Length: 66
Image 1 (cartoon, rainbow, N blue to C red):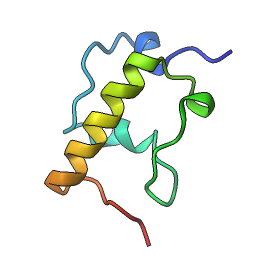
Image 2: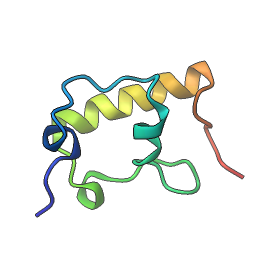
Image 3: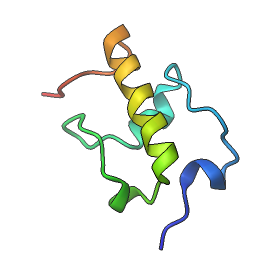
Image 4: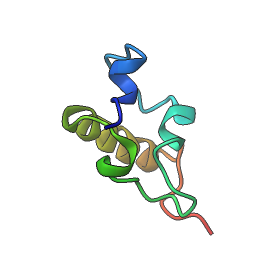
């Protein structure tokens, strides 16, 4: 079983402005990768989803990659 990336690296808060970390959890089509594949905990996945949505709304991440 995979260890949660955020607890492994001692990241308490997932920031929407840190796009490099957020991009690790997006596939080439800019869709979020599931918890099963990434090994992220449920709490971190919820925070990650919120951060990705905020970054998309502001324009830091794309909604769809072409």
